[in-house]
Image 1 (cartoon, helix red, strand yellow):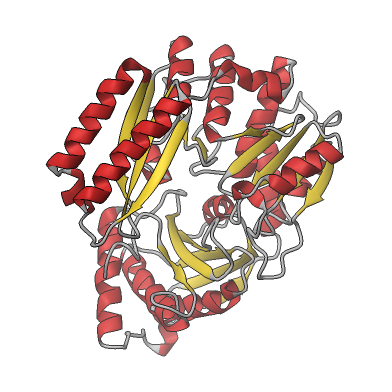
Image 2 (image 1 turned 90 degrees about the vertical axis):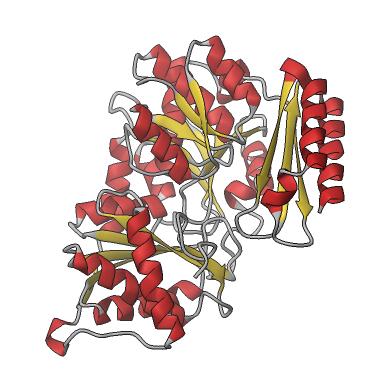
Length: 451
């Protein structure tokens, strides 16, 4: 089975098509349960977002784990970071999230966490893949003896426990009583969590997109579609707006002027505050896609900055390697290992609000310490799945060298192949938008010529 379907970000696909079917989910539950049981796992905790297929896949996964002799604890709709936290709280040995994050309702996916809140390691993933391939190939899976079958239980107070955890990451000497905030839950897993966290801390909360029906998750709302949040902040004269995505592991802000504050700007704000409070352990980890403006702003504060490959797993790996605590992506996936083991949109939002309150200025003013450089991204579709060959070709390599010569010290070039489809992403950023656009188009033309 290709890592396209199972790997660092779990299984993901359109429900009803390979690989996401009830049969596939049950076999995956059995394969994962078999591997985890061999290392002493006795119980896994399963959470999901609000998309309609989650109920079906939850039952299938439950059956697969039971067949492998692993007990299951069900928590219902719950943010991805909540599952990572609750797996430890309820003494489960692993956590499973059924979610396709920011994708449309007709997609779904399955992610795994160890009991420490960290995603499974490569060796475990490989072993699960091998068992899953066998089950698919022979259209069969094993089953333990009847007296060894796993049992299932439903946990009713999971939401309350996670709400208290989130509130506990916000300083007790601060209050949100003077804050009017619009919260966009993307009709997703945080619909019954995020509003309660902010209101219980004293904020005047205006909720939007908090009525999931199984089909409206991420539909023109949430962290990937900020237009409704911008409109609501202005109409309600709110101090700021907060948007999470479908599984609430990402967060984006809108300031009181209706302007977007993205993940790179959030990282800058958090790093600046941590530096001022002597709470910054080392530096900041971004990704290859992080805006150059972030790197320059951090450099101006003598804060080290390194880039990981795109993906939260790689950011976490760099943080672990360096011993640093803060990292993230422009998409709003923020990692603060001082507070959580994985990206958590609600916790990250609270840390931004803390920085705003301690600074004594608005979010709009606070973000001005960083100037984003113009960035152009062009996706070039390929005729065949040969991205590595094309990127290494003489035509493309020369085009990149030529563009870098034009940009000099004022910008950078990045070529990345997609992990899920035959295309190459051409990214160029520099101090000049006209130059940025022209050089991105120049390289994209070379890629098309070589494909």
